[in-house]
Amino acid sequence: MQHHHRGRRPFGESERGSIKYDILEILWDGPRHGYDIMLTIEEKRGFRPSPGSIYPALQMLEEGDFLTGQDIDGKRVYTITDKGSELLAKHRETTPSDDASPETKGAVSLIARSVQTMVGIKMVLKEIGRTRNVEMYTQALAILERTRRDLYALLTHE
Image (cartoon, rainbow, N blue to C red):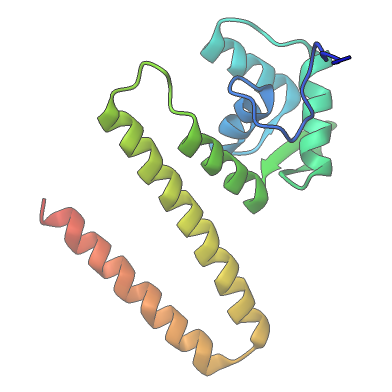
């Protein structure tokens, strides 16, 4: 006999309209507290999620190291982590909107790849910094400075 589970999927399972992605999208723009997140979702989606859906999702995201929470002036303020940024980038890459044009879907994929690349750069720079090897860090900085100049040159030649 097959059992059909109704209701929620496991938290880590990808879901198109999952509140966790709404939360990560909002935190991508900067740190927020729970009530502010609820109001922002209401602005974007036209409905306000209940505290009973927001706060457990925030707790699960925090426990999974996708965001961090810090008590500031009596409110818990949440900030997306590198791991949360990677999850959001993967979600963006795999779920452009249904009505998006092929060009838009391609752009979403490129943006997601760029976010993943930036997160990877940050991670490797942290590792280089941990070596305390000044020569290696100097070489890494020169690479970053060349890349920045190349990107500005690309931008100004359009």
